[in-house]
Length: 191
Length: 239
Picture 1 (cartoon, chains in turn green, orange):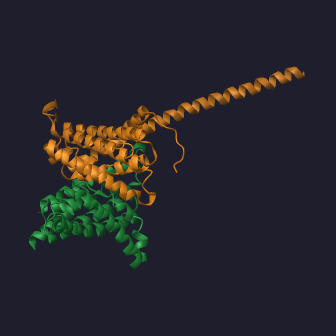
Picture 2 (cartoon, rainbow over the protein chains, first blue to last red; picture 1 turned 180 degrees about the vertical axis):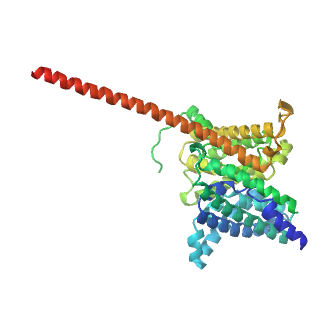
Picture 3 (tube, rainbow over the protein chains, first blue to last red; picture 1 turned 90 degrees about the vertical axis):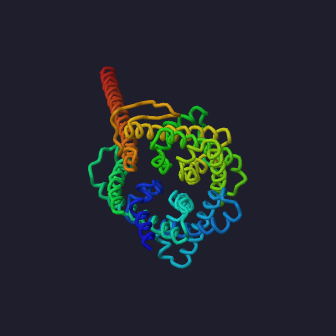
């Protein structure tokens, strides 16, 4: 249990997927200019990563490894992720139109979010058990959601600041992200 | 299905990828590997060349099949093609360049979801000839390589104090800010480089506008003078 807690904490804060692993940067910079957008994207990513993390783990250890097909993992995983996103989109549309209204537009974008494929591959690379893979996927994606939401607040405030013309938008966002990454380095001491 | 566009010559196509639409500094695409692997020049170059290789193959293949694939399912088909090429690259690197394979780590399979590759497939190769698509891929790939090597060169030089390439030491300084090879340094360096490039662009646009303003003012003056002259002539003729 203690190990799982450590793993959860590490994947959530210390090894944060955006600020120290550099996965999912495109969407991090792309949708973080508005609070509502960031929250929508963050939640959609949370669902997809947690589900696909477990499903790809099962496929890898139950089908690919016994069949000696581990070299196919990149192709299989990306297909699983794409299928997952489609199924999730249809399911949400059917069962919760309200949720679909807020998450719908972000779902198709997630297939090419490197965080999703990245977490699926990291689960395998780190030789996790199924429980560990579940905890790792869930907390990593929660870390993504947390950082993207906090960052969207910062960017909304930055709009009010007098920033030189050339640094407006992405460059100043990157510099703010750099300061956030420095702050997150402080969490290393907690473990 | 696409609107008629002017065809670029191979040279123009390559320059477009390298400078005008540089994927790293202008389009801001493919940020994950850009920030993740640029701790050393060798890794940056390795990643850049890997993407160049994948991009040339995928653009060629997708341009080849562009008329066969129904447009409703084109994105999944493109992703499968890209995943196939990336898997091939993984085998090649694992067999021939094991060091590079190990240091790129997870970012190597993640080339599959690199926005540049799917982006070029969708925006260019899906409605251009094979010949044009190959040059577009070369331009974009070289542009990405240029972006990564610039970023990794700056980070390695200032962060470790020396730059290594293929076992040679290119530069050596006595001071080093380790901060720059850490994650926070990646964001900072890229932010500064993009900011400087944008500032130069803004300045250029301002200068252009200033020159245009002067030209317009001059043209207006000439026009006014001409009108006055014509008026004077008319008055002279009249009386």
